[in-house]
Length: 123
Image 1 (cartoon, one colour):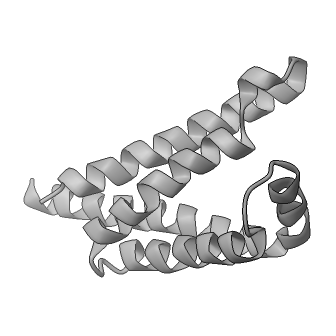
Image 2 (cartoon, one colour):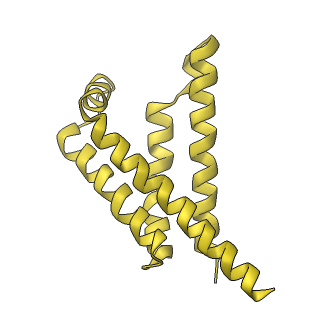
């Protein structure tokens, strides 16, 4: 039973870490549109906030994958992810398919935050 728990823990680290590291790389690719959205929403210093957030996503994601201070990495990702959910995916402000898409992304991010919380509770 302990082998199964160990294997599931490794899988959880891999999946949660890959999610954040992949999204960090995805955000690099979408740098210009993200900066435009951030400026439109009045986020202060988007040229500082965006690279800081992307760096955090990639570095903390890799830390979780390789089990390097995974609790610290998960903790550092939780609050920025929650804030980002409300800034970039306010589904309640949309109608129709746009609402459904933003709701889906919002819930996916919330699920990953819950996964990060579980990492904090793990032994």
